[in-house]
Image (cartoon, rainbow, N blue to C red; front, side):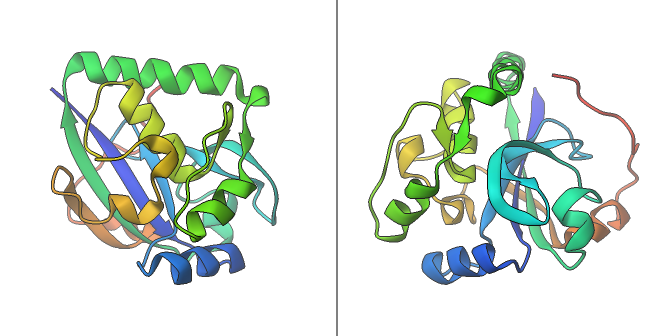
Length: 188
């Protein structure tokens, strides 16, 4: 058995405030990581930390990019135990998106649709929650009761299958009460 990690965050950017107000939950963004150190986290978001205009597949790190700018980012880190087979499939699915990242784009229209309780499914287009949900589904990890294109960040909030590992400032994650072997990166 292996553990994977789902990370929900709120950075305080204009876009995250808008998503938070629409969803009525504390967190507006979701990422997935293959190790406890969250190095890296995978998602769909800003390609340039200073502007939301250019977005797509991203590899996020706690003290880099937008998180280095927004040091007061709040988060929840959840773990989920999966089989070795599911873990390897997840790793492979994320790798496939990573090596084909130029084909994928951030789906701005999906944000609008989700804000009015509608879904939008487009090939090679994701928002963060749809990406994480799709990677889980493609890896036969069934924790959500809806299709990936219908998933919002708040759908990951307090899911029964997820174990809450940490809540607080993302920048303080490594200081929590566990000893971390910081630096171990899972290569995809």
